[in-house]
Image 1 (spheres, rainbow, N blue to C red):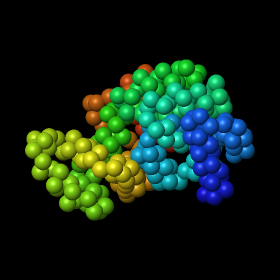
Image 2 (image 1 turned 180 degrees about the vertical axis):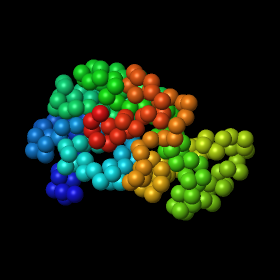
Image 3 (image 1 turned 120 degrees about the horizontal axis):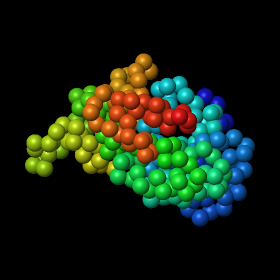
Length: 237
């Protein structure tokens, strides 16, 4: 991994964030030309960035060296601003991204307005936690929770009346969102696991199911969604 490229990409990320918050755009323009940056991956939050970065490491990808900038935009409602700055109206970068199913309309409007196709972003069936739990399975996720020292809090959580009778997948998904930082940490851990969708010798996909996942306007089987997830990491389809 080229440390100078990594440092430069972090500087670009900071410059873009400052620009989106009302600061000057010149630093981002200068860095985009120098690195160079060719693709921006727009993600809702830090947990999504942690998961994509972990998956890239597991696959031996150096995104910074490939000119791929992975950005946390601080929520789906900010995607329009980032898409304008980074897409055709601004820096002219290729746009891609990943969002929860409920946030798809924000991404669809933003990408269309910035001259990108809806099919260039990818949508989790519910959210990223749901994707990872379905891919690894509840037992494996519980093992990872245990390994991270959170088994006792999980057991306490599962004894709550509201969790009685719920499917294990729903219980785990809710648990991962009960503590600040747990989503970020837990999204990184499954992608660092030796088994599951991010393993070095395994596919980037969830197990075959009858559920479908939207990728832009298209609806495709979850089992066939690996090109989408790989596309987010690679910065291309």
